[in-house]
Each structure stands twice: as C-alpha cells, then as structure tokens.
Image (cartoon, rainbow, N blue to C red; front, side):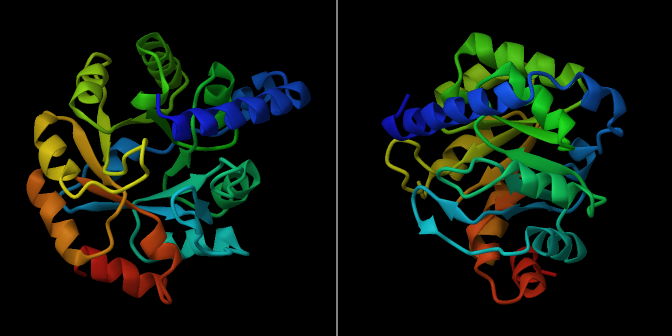
Length: 257
C-alpha cells in the first residue's frame, strides 16, 4: 500500500474509532431508513451518466472550493443533469463530513455515492444509515478478504457498490467478487499524479457487461468523448465542477448538451 494511502487510512481508522464510541451500532437507524435508490440503473443508461462530486479539498491539490452550502451545490448538480451526486465524507484530507451527506440526502431525489475510504464493517452500516445509496470500495486499500467480505456485506444491506481500481492486478482482484460497477481511477495513489494512459489501458480490460466509470482528471469534453468511446458508461468529476463559475454550463459542456 502506498504511503499516501496508508496515511489517509490511518486517519480514517482514528476517526472511525471516535465515532464508534459515540454510536456503537446502527440497529435503530437501519430499521427505520427508507429504501436505497437504484444507483446501478442511474449509471447504466443509453447516454453517458455523470457522478458530480461535492469536494472541498484533495491531498494532491489542497483546497479546491469553500462550498459553504453543500446542499445548494448538490441540488444544482441534480438540476443540471447529474445522475448521481458523490459526497466526500473523509474530513482530514478532503474536508468532507458525514453531516454534509445527511443534509444533502434530505434534499435530493437521485442516488448518492458516499466517497470515503471504507476499511471497516462499521463504515458499511454507517453508510446505509446516513442515507447513501452507493458505496466506494478501493481495491488498493483492502486485502482480498476485506474486499470480498465488505462487498458481500454492503450488497446484503441493500447498497450498490462502486469498486475502484488503478491497475491490471486490481482489475483481476475486483473481478473475483463479480462486481456490477467498476471505476478506473486515473490518479496514481503512490504519486498522486494523473496517468494519461490509465483509461485507455484499463477500461477495455473490464468486461462490457460491467458498468465502467472513469474517475479523476476529467476536465474537457474531448476526454469525455474518449472514455465513452473506450466503453465507459459514466464519469466522476469533482474538481472541474466545484471550480466552475456556472455549474449547469460546466456540466453541459462536459456532456455535450
């Protein structure tokens, strides 16, 4: 595991331990929460789908946008054509919060992806309890046993799962759990640099029956056309949209609307 990823996960585990002391389990929340929205169908349409991200900061770029009102931004994404809204909940490196997701859930009628580093079973139940519909599992941050167990647990409680890969070996590991959605992240977790060839090298290796998502580094319409031609059914975009002066224009430019 890369030192950057290991450092992030170390902080996540500390934060999880603190939350677990305050809320040991989610029995009551899980019993009363509404149904999960169909994130899979939202990402598997005839036209390319967009996962638009509420993202204040990143380890590679530092602060990106203040986002004083994350709910307003998420609603703007929804109204501008996003199929799914991604909400960062990792606070130390990304400036996210669970409170953001809970607030956004109350105002959205499209699926929400919880974007975080899921490394414990506690976080899986937590993800469902706070109202997310789609869970991110990063292959690079998990053992194969964890990947298998977490994927099974998430699907058993109704969550859809986006399995994130960065190289060929991780695709092989991901395929062992029969995922429905795989995201190719072009960002190298060791250097935090964007690979210009990751999409062209990796997306075609994923079987067409799996919904393929292109993640990271997408800022231009030409890139969107390229990944769509490679077989991607969706793109995940954060930085470009949070920095856009006009959200709707930014989305329409990327999607060619």
